[in-house]
Each structure stands twice: as structure tokens, then as C-alpha cells.
Length: 405
Image (cartoon, rainbow, N blue to C red; front, side, top):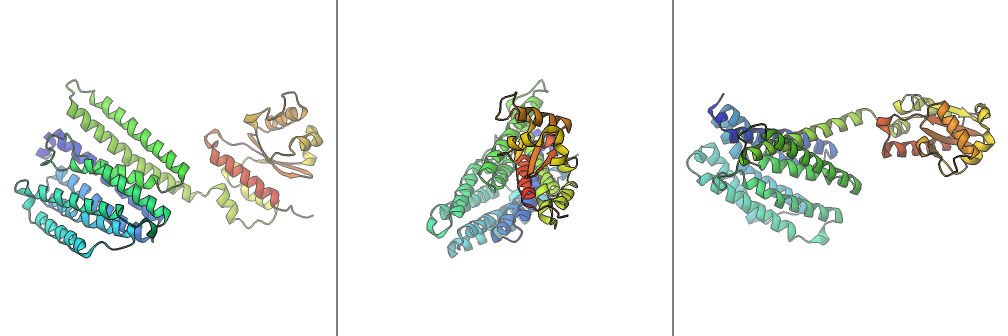
């Protein structure tokens, strides 16, 4: 074990950085899968790759005590402003001023060379120069973003510029904590945590309005739960102090956010490998209602579905059922007595029909004559998405012709 591990601050720094590197790696795969050939995505991945490399190399250098890994991490940190400028140009769809680009390129090259030669190990001069270079480049990127011509970009592109600019501004304090020569009393470096928050926001804002709201609620819940877990874990030690609490909370939040990214990516992968019911129907070449229902039977949601035609509904009085279901496509058992009074004849017969087959939903796929599909939806699958899928399946079945004799 290296001597650095006697320092709890260094242990916390390494865990936060390695968790962030893992989370960023997962997020890069998700972004690549979402837009594999996009020019903006490619440039964004380059910038994220530099950040992930900084965090990974720096964390490993603290674990192993390797001077080479630490120098490589500083070299990648010196190149990151160049990546940020490339992303800015891509978002604006125009080049930055030539003099500014040459200055950033030259500064990144000189600082990377200085890091590889070990100049960072002699005093705080390198840290001060790197911090000044990074913040000056970010200020330049911010200036380019906020002085753009909005008319030259689409509404979605302008919204993306504002979101990225706001996120970058909020992440700056986290980055500042990485420079111990500037903030010597900080209990833990928070640059990796800031990167995780930024990538969470980028991934969340990639969906629709409802998806964004759900994503922000989920992210907020994860952060609050992680802070509570970190605070509780810190108080297991009788000699707890504020610095230890901050370290534990930072480690917990970084770990939970990284695990959340991995869980989301794995869930998406599973969803893509097992297509939903609508995707199964879309791939089907069934030309009749009978063959389409047979195809649906292979899907778990419809595995136990029961189809009842009018001749099989004689015990439930088809005339009353047809009148009750006149304006209904999908009937949920949980909504009974539906829009009628509890003692209505139609309610009694529908309730008996659903109970006899332990069904949670009734799909009306034919009215003249009656053609019903009874489905039992497991409790774990009872959500708005499933309800929407059932309604769409009902429409597809109703519009599909029956086999002719």
C-alpha cells in the first residue's frame, strides 16, 4: 500500500475520480449509441474522453504512486481546453477566430509538454498556469456561445447552447476544487463529481419534455439519497468532523451517480434486445387477425391472453355486453364500476367475465359480432406505457381483417 493512503483526503479523491471515469465511460457509450455518426457527438466524445482520461490516470496514479501516470493525467488536462473549443465550434457551426485557435493550440501543447517533462513537480507554478489557461479558454468558449447569431441556428440548437453554457458555468466551482494551490483547504477534489453532474444533465436533456422532467427528478432523488447515505456513513465514526462528512458525501454521490449511469445503460441494452409488443407487431407479416393474435401470444404480456367470440359469450348475454362496450376500446378491471352504477346489468356481466378469466384488461377487437381479448397484466408491468401499448394493439387488431372461411 502506498504512503498516500494514510491520507483520507487522497483516498476520497481517488474514489471520486475513478467513479467519475467509470461513469463517463458508460455515458460515452450511450452517447455513441444514440448518435453514432453525428459530428457534434464525435467532438463531444473527444472532449469527454480527455476528461475521463484525466480522472482515470489521476486516480490510478494515487493508487499506485506512479509518477508517469500523474504526468500523463496532467498532459490530458492541458489538452482538455482544446477539446472544449472544438465542441464550441461544432455547436456554433462556425470556426473560432484563427488567432484564438492558435493560442489555445499552442498553450495546450506547451503545458502538455511541460507536464510530461515533470515541471509540475517543482512548486505551484504549473498548477497556476494550467488553471489560468483552462479558465481563460472556458471564458473564450462562453463568449463565443453567448455572442452567437441566434438566427443562424435552429431553435433546438439555440436551446442546446444555453443548456451547455449554463451547465459549464455551474461546473466551474467543481473544477476549481481540483487545484489545491488555489483552494488548499478543500477536503476533497470535486472535479470528477462535477463531470458526472454535467453528463447526467446532457443525457437527461436529450429526450422530450416529459422525459426531461422525469430524468431531473430521478437525478435529484439519487443525489439526495446519496447525500443521506454519505452523511449516515460518516457518523459511524465517533470522531467525525466536517471534512470527513464532506468526503463521505462526495464519495457516496459520485458512486451513486456512476452506478446510476451503468444501471440506465444496462436497462436500455436489455430493452433493445427484447423488443416491446409494438415492435413485435411491426416486424410481423401476419395478414389476418388470427395470425396476429398467434404472434402476440409469444410476447409475455399476451402469453395468457384469452380470445372470446360472441358464440363463446352466450352465458354473459352478448346483447347487453355489446351495448355496454359500444364506446369502449379497452376496459380496465381496476376502474369498475366504470361509468355506470354498480347494479347495472352490464357491470355485473363484465365483472363476472373478467373475474372468470382473472383478467385485468378487456380489449374490444370486434363489435359485429363481438370479439374480445382478455389480458392479465402483471402488477410490475402496470404502467402508462403498457396501457398505451394495449390501446394501440387493440386498434391494430380491430383494423386487421379476420380470416375468411
